Length: 322
Image (cartoon, rainbow, N blue to C red; front, side, top):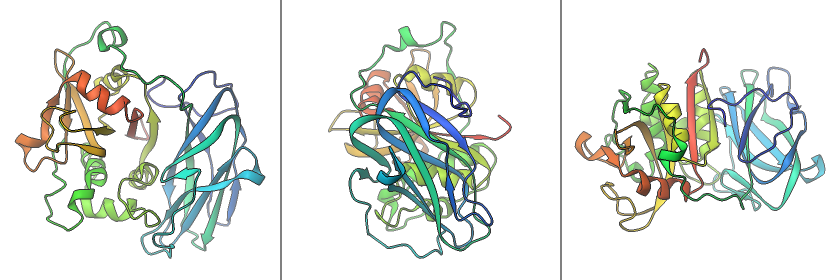
């Protein structure tokens, strides 16, 4: 799988998971946009979207997804902080926060974006689409077998930020915007955790960890950002070796990730910034309250189980010139 997804041009996607980009979307004078139908040879039953651009000053943009236009359901609602959004009114199944989980595998996907409040500054420039089949095997792949032959240690200079640094009531739930802020600052963008959290907050589900809205918020700072599913730690190594830190989503039970600042979690995000000589994973874990407790080397196999066992989700963000 390519580190950066190619522009979708109608080519056949043969395997899962796959991530592609569609150009265009809502813009000034365009209140509804229909993307080209995605047709693939490999069946999929899970969909994640990654809108890039800006929702505008008061905009509220809804992305509807389905096999056909008549079966499309709202999956993501990207709204400006000042836009009116039904607080706490969740989208019903098959939508699960940020993932469309279909009851059966399909081979075609229709996507429609609709603007629900007039804002001429809203502009969607591209839409990342991640497809996957839930029956695909996600067992750990041995790093030595999957990694490049010229493996060498790497450590990127990613500034550590604790999600507890600002002492707010929401600190326990700020791992995602804190991780996003670390990556933004790595790329030289002066962003604050509270600012990013405000942009990425999912008011329907009342949480800060919505993957799609987090990459959307990061894109509003000028980065190209997307969600991607992976099948090995070796894929992370290739991104980090190329100089790009990656945000990963983990889950583990009590004692499942030795050295972690939290004992267990059903969902936690952190920044992967490097690898040791033995292939252990260097991270900035925002759950740590200090540099010593947050900049950690996690055992590769334990990390792999916590990450791949949770779907192998990663949030990527790079400057557009890359």
